[in-house]
Structures are given as structure tokens and as C-alpha cells.
Image 1: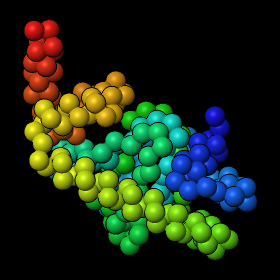
Image 2 (image 1 turned 90 degrees about the vertical axis):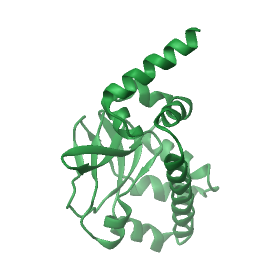
Image 3 (image 1 turned 60 degrees about the vertical axis):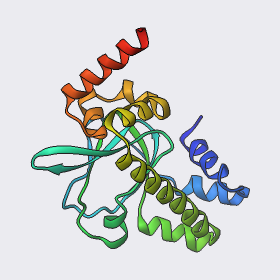
Length: 196
């Protein structure tokens, strides 16, 4: 499946598109490939781009006392935007870094505005996507604070199993809020319990 088809299919899962609208999306797409380790955004920079993941994985983190605190991973068909920085042109608090070789659709505010002007319906579609993403993020955050690290890890295995294979265990540990040694002990305990 081509990059164009992936993004159009994503939109069509939300709302039906006319042939003209599908073509407008295809024509406005800018696809870039980034090697593993590429920093898309640093703390203190102003975000001027948003992304849709076609292939690969990007992690979002803040630095706290010199240590990465990972707050999300973005994989295929996820949107990535440092919203506060992108919308209000404020310095970002986050880093965005490619965990793998990654292929992204890259958007800017001006491209977005051009699309809205040519096809006004896209503004309501974008708002719907933003509302869904924000609601999901709030739900995930609320659950995250109510769960133990082991519950978070089990949920990750259940809901995003590919991440366990795709990113280093120390990053998984950061994401669920424990030290790598604690995650190793947790995994060993879970393995023992499965064999009992």
C-alpha cells in the first residue's frame, strides 16, 4: 500500500471522502524519511511541523534532572504534534526522536490552512480527529495515574504488543515509570507465574 493510500484510508475510516477531497490530500502530502536517532524536536524549540506516522516509531519525552521521562510512543497511523508549541508557537517542553528508521507525512500550519481554504470540510474533519485524539489522551492519562507499573506493562503487552519488540527495555521502563532493573524483575515474576 502506498503512502498516499495509507493516509486516505485513515481519513476514510473517519468520514467518507469525495474523489476531489482524496486527490487534495494526496496532492498536499509531503512524505519524508528519517533515520533512527533523528531528533524531530528538541526542548526549547518551537514546533513548526506535525506528523502522521506511515512507518516506524517516534518517542516523546521530557528531560528531568538529566533523565529521559518518556510519555508516549507513536507508531503507524498515529498523529504526532507538540500541540502547545505548534498552536501557540511557544518553546516545546518535549523532545521527539525517531526510535527506528521512520517515514512520516509532514504537515505545517500554512499547508493546513491552504487545505482548509480549498476544502472547508477538512477543518471539521481535522477538529474531529483532534477531539478524538485529545479525548483518548485524557482517558489514557487518567488510567495511567490509577495503575501500578505492572498494570501499565500488562496493558502495553495487551494493547501495543509490537512496542515490546521494537524499542529497548530501558525505554519501556521509563514509559511505565520504573527503573530498568525493576522491569526485569517484573518480567521474570510474570514469566514464573505463567509457568506455575
